[in-house]
Amino acid sequence: MEAKGFPTSADIYLELDGKKIAVVQGYTARASKSSQSVEAFGESEPVATIEGQRKYTLELTRLYATEDAVSDGINFYELRDFSLVICKPDRKVIYSGCQWSAIQEEGQLNAMVAEKVTVVASKRIETTA
Image 1 (tube, rainbow, N blue to C red):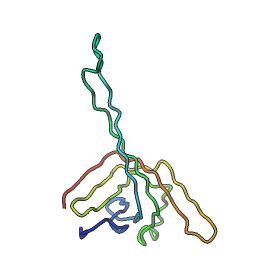
Image 2: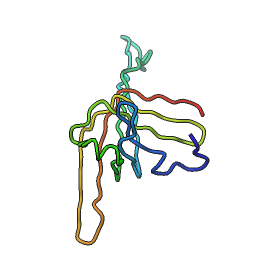
Image 3: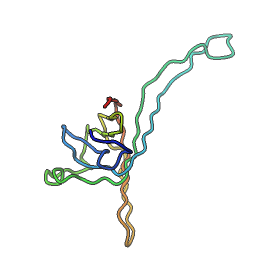
Image 4: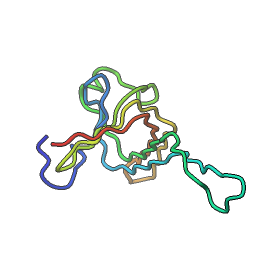
């Protein structure tokens, strides 16, 4: 990993079976979890909270398939169980077990097609450089 500054589209990519299949120009990551409060009879405030399951939702913009993926006939609509890899200067963040939940394309006359893919991941892993 040679990233020394801010991540570029070469540092943000989709991976399937250990192969880079697409580079991503931009992303937004949201993490949420379904925590619950534990209430006790006679208490005015919760006595504890229980951590719930985590959910990772990622919005990817401008995906470009790699030459290998194009020659292999990769179809983004058929992708399952892939990973999003984000190389940062001091660590690598990997969202694995990804499934897409929405694909949006917007095209206008004399403009580039803007793609937006919403992805749900089952795990988030950080490794240090």
